[in-house]
Length: 241
Image 1 (spheres, rainbow, N blue to C red):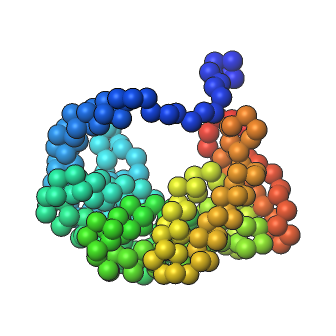
Image 2 (cartoon, rainbow, N blue to C red):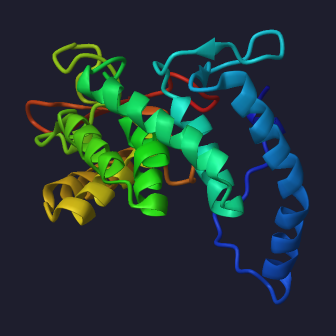
């Protein structure tokens, strides 16, 4: 692929036209039976375990709660419960909450920034929908673990790896923006403003350095953790260099 084959369009906000919201809602209601059928089938298939991050031969292997994607499945269960009110969806999602609690307590495969959506889609969602206080407590534990990855000098949350790893120090990636809601939620739940302050600082740094003037982005950007100065951008995954 070359840059000539890419259709570049300006960034623009989309304003819903009269009747468009109703049309979208009609389409969603039309597809929901099929989605719920798939969720129920997956509930039988995965049970209290989880799909792997990628499929093999067209099927997702069943794994323990170790990948960065496991909350996507739990989040589907919460969405199904929110839509239907069916107790079976809630019951399985709440069983997952225990698994996420053990994972953060034991720091099992948690050495990355994806704690954000791992615990937003599982525990934050569970607390909001059911008032489950255990889920809220677990989400705060995860937010505290995510804060350990925040480098105040650089103003960013380190994406991957050990905090003293010279190859990973000061690296933020565009994906981290999806992890920040956990920190805002933690400030709202605890009254402690430092979580939200770190999230705000990180998104400011991402806007300043990761997003280019034409709207494209670097995948990763490195900051100097000693001085806070910007270093360079790089693409670990993606097309644009």
